[in-house]
Image (cartoon, rainbow, N blue to C red):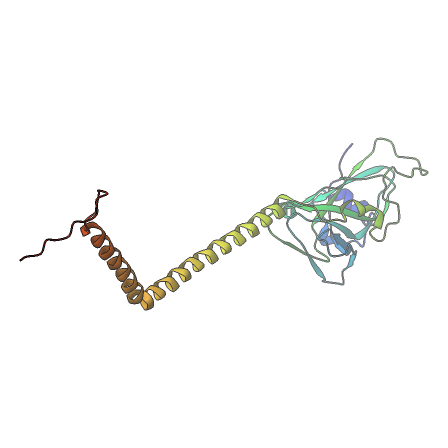
Length: 256
């Protein structure tokens, strides 16, 4: 199996409509660059609607989100070769990685769907026409018969994203980034609660200080009078003689 070089793509790519529409500036040394088409779908939890893109229209793939992207180009793979597709390195370096199949079967015709995942920490902005994919082709030793129908679940003649393939990612996935965001939100709430408690402590201290300042003399005099009263009663108790016998007190003799 030999991969096509630039000369093979120039010879067959345009004349056999392997990629349509064809643009010479998308040709690489051993492949061809594919671009974002008119449909995409993400699982960000906004209703599960397949979105349409006008010319130059843009969208965002957030951290931890899956996305299906339909290519702008239609592929027509001859029966005597097999094609391979992937996201370009510049796309992968941003964190957007291809998680779908990497091959296009011989005899396939139609647009291609890329299933991708944002494994990076930031939003990735894309727009229609961005050439973020690449396709390569290799000759088969023996060509397949024309009746070959392929084994993929994606049907020939694909023009839009089928709803049956998005069911697996239609709900929002819980990723490490989302868990980190939740933990950060909880930490922020906890810090806010701590600050509120600190403010309450300061306020209570200020109120208590004001009360003591205003009522301090009155409270101090009341406590002083109470303590003085206790001292007087205690002193009287200690100085009063105590009759420890049962004899009645003797009268004091009078002077003649």
